[in-house]
Image 1 (cartoon, rainbow, N blue to C red):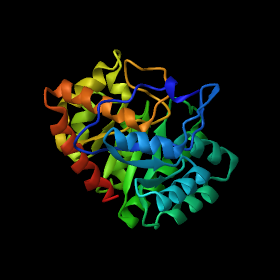
Image 2: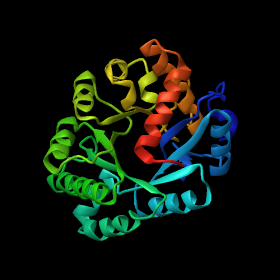
Image 3: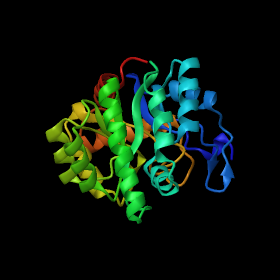
Length: 281
């Protein structure tokens, strides 16, 4: 799979924005190898006006790699976590606490600016043991975010109510981000009322995402973030192609059009929002 299989490069933005959730270490998309390497992905993003990324871990190996990359490339910040689906499997295997301790040990690194992606996913996890492990892991990540003064990036799939209940029970961190926002206007209202950030991926551009689109129009501009979740979720009309951080530009322009504002105005605000959550790159 070559760079020609990706969406075309967008017209660059003048105001720099950020891909606040990407998995650059993933080298498989479906059944095919992805040939674009990390440095190329970052160069193409920068040329398109995406001036920085948050590289997101889902287990100890990918989280450690995120930290290492953030140390050597100032366009990258790291987020570290156990993915909720991994947390479920680890709980069932009896090894969740061991793996949680490894993630906690990474949290104090100055280039780590978030714990994520953590959260609750009831789409793939049905067992009570697995679900309780997800919630226990989520609560641990929330506590670390508060203790270390970092953001938390939330993976929420088929679990809106449970995520909100957990945040309110434990106490949400000051900087709480709903990664790849998948709710409707009702969840958007809850996020707005609590000052929680909503991060929109390519899913907001899909024809069947009317609820997400209504949320994107409703959310206060100062709570909007943008992401790719690359290599997944390429925005329309490139849905089904492998994704890369430069495609954040397409998503931002789509949201600007939804809201009836200039893309550069939104880009300037999203840049400010992102730095407010993660600090300077």
